Image 1 (cartoon, rainbow, N blue to C red):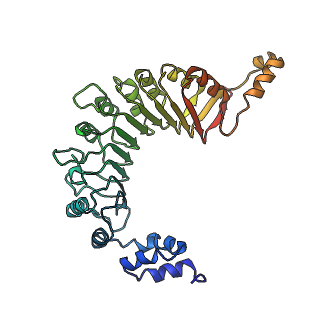
Image 2 (cartoon, rainbow, N blue to C red):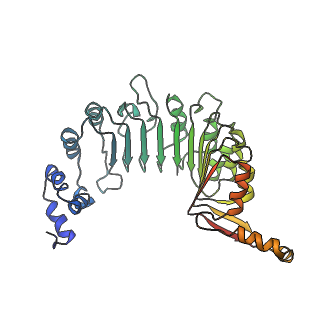
Image 3 (cartoon, one colour):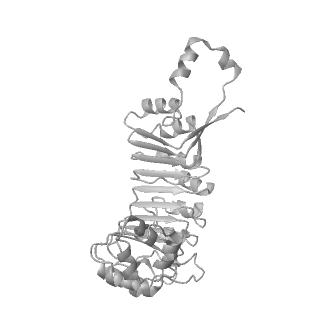
Length: 340
């Protein structure tokens, strides 16, 4: 069998049933990778999903990741209310559900999801109006909600999250219909405020959303904050209103050393500061600085030589003095010199 090319083996496996496919995945590592090929699962139907649920999913299942049909030529709904109800009864320990390219517009609300869920991730999905409105009792006690590229997610959806009693972590990425006014309305205090949040992440290219975070009333009790996108400067303005902030991540943006120092000088409780794919803009050295040369300038250049794990040594040293209890992490960062 080792002499057969991969496409021939996948063609052979395509004639097997679901039960036989899953058994074939236990033969060896190569067969396991072949069984995972999308060409074997592109004809997934609701009937096959029912077979998997009734025969292979059980009480031990804790994490489920499903890809829907939004990118398929057939399109259509993928999950049904009876299937979700059966999932709740068959998998009482399910605590994390990730849905990709799934059309949820056929469901009334998130109350149909398993009540044991603690983490819900929606990536490139479609949701109906009022989907996040919970009608207790019986609603899932979701603590972490991740929304990544959900085009139909609006300000009304965001404000309805205020009814979630245990929501403490919220991650918003590429939500084109969430406006600055909608985000400000959810900032404490207020009737629709997300006052229970302890961790908030926003990764978007929309400057207005960052400005809304900066101009809000402040998020009392927020301990973790992640900002990303083309413009994070307005979002950094709110850091002075977050005295309890202990974790901060800045990613995929352009920053200057002075901007970071000014934003972090009041964060005395900050324990971890992360920079992910950040472009640090530094000022070019002019002739006047070169004339001041001598042994002092040569010694500083030797100490301030950047490295892969420490691209901005001056910033690390200044933050170490400003925030002695804070650990720093630089990941895939680079330095650009501004010669203007």
